[in-house]
Figure 1: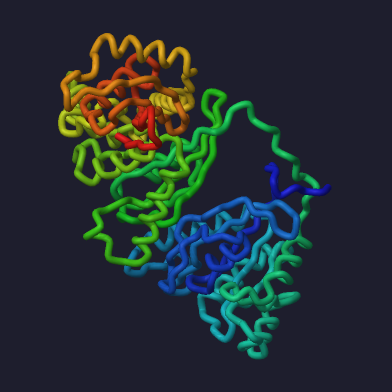
Figure 2: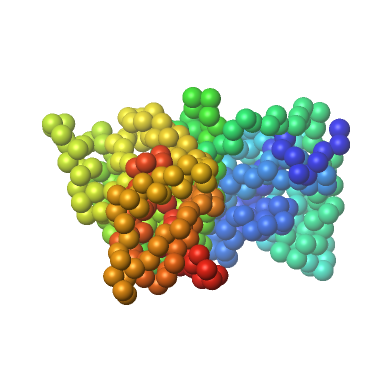
Length: 464
């Protein structure tokens, strides 16, 4: 079967990149993808969650998975304790789960550096010898190749010497990967009638984002730990609800800039913010007990400025006191202290128990419908005539202006352009009036609406 890089395929074989921390797995992952998808940093243990991405290598489709580093302190996984405690155990368990389900394993070792962790990991991989390829990294220019041949004593059929950073030996490794895989079960994915709804889960650290992600995807794709900042890369998952396909982006917790001190966290936060660009709807997870914070406001405002639908998800609602009107009071408090986002829906959820999950997804579907709505120019200008009659623009010598007509120029995000005379006189308050009318009368009640005012005579404009 001939595959087309521009098409999507289902049932593609999965290739897991494994090894101890800091051997270059994420660098190799990015090299094979041809893009910077995983965070790379000299600090050991940067990758925690498995990061999966569809790839097209040597004209073949596959699913590439970057795993967390295999880390030991002692002779057994059960005894593994370090400064981050049980978190390393979770990382290793997730890596071992990925190994079991992968169609091919690429074990990455470092040239000239062989550790007890490498030896222990090789022992754990013995049951998977038939689907194992061994690559020795950091051998640019033939560096340390000779001494690395000693690794053949572990019974490996062959070693592939590469430099993930510089690209040495990558083509040969790719040929070996493709040669080991079975593509007979791969089929072209049928085009869906509707595009998937892409949702980014954002919020401060330790608000339950990964727990919610796992709940909605019915998986354990994201690591869950009581330690803030567990998630670093954006973890992508997919699921179907009410015959609608969803893509979920679990992101790192976003703290104030003054609190971000490590390079790793800096890149994690940037990835989380970039996830907004890739999403249609943002679930802003707020700790129900702590309430809305200034950082929550900044995240919501950023998502809104990019035209994304925002759902304020009050998480950990299962531990809130059961009293009359508790939710209404919490919702009204958010809208009072964050009036600019009063249009955004508020939903009470519990990522731990599943409370409110259906309502959360129903809200996402509703917001997506509003984001995708396109108003024809005729009905839009008929509505504009009514709005101008109900509240005419000012007519003073210095304040007068006329709104001539309007068009909707985009959906997802929703943007309207109004053409007016003397645009310097158009006030923010009148633009707000038009925005509120659009929301109320045209079906955009719960999403951000951008308005640009352009001159009806000259090529001038201003966004408001």
